[in-house]
Amino acid sequence: MYNIINLILFYSLFHHIGNSLNNSKIFMTIIKISVSIICCLQYFIYTNSFYYMKPLLISFFLYDIFYIFFYIGLKKLTYNVVIYHHISLTYCLLYEPTAINTMPLFIFIGELSNIPMYSHYLLIQYSNIKATNVSNKLLQLSFFIEVSTYILCRYVFYTYYFIISYPHYQLQHGFAFYYMHFPLYIMGLNWGKNLINQFILDIRYKNKLF
View 1: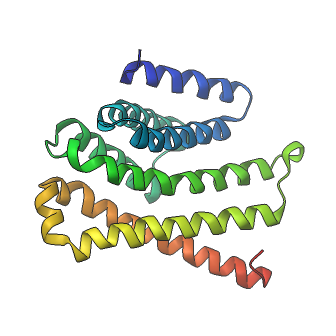
View 2: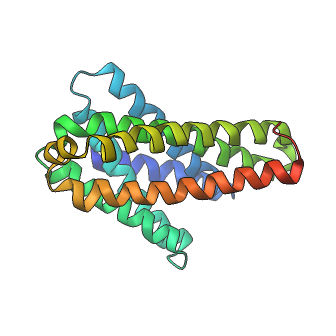
């Protein structure tokens, strides 16, 4: 059945298969890409997509928190931020009364920007394996797509709603604006700044785009 517990069990099974093959990171990245793609498809397929997105995302957030705690650790600030992201979104999906009407579009935009990011990260992981070596041109192209999509979704779309239409947006989303939307927006801007800086450094270092 399609519910949170069964989805967590599926993530665990799939991830542990990867762990037994010494490819834990690759299998976890495949889970992330799959969740993002399925979530985007749900937005288009179902009229009430919130009911289908909710168990998919909550189960993934819970398993990813487990993965961070037991496989990565909390020494880096980045992973503490990721945990805040997961907890605040989970709370919003479960208890925020406005979420059913307001969240599907914003989840879709967020997950849409995640697909190129996870895909690029997966290519980087494959490039470190001799049997699946990835060309530098493909890595550069995937990074360009990642940065472009991120800017369009997180900077252009989210900034329009946060800055230009703030009064309407704040009323529409209620208290979730303060504990979830705005903090995650700021986190996204900072992450985007790091992506752009890295992309510029790559161009300068290699002296060409592709």
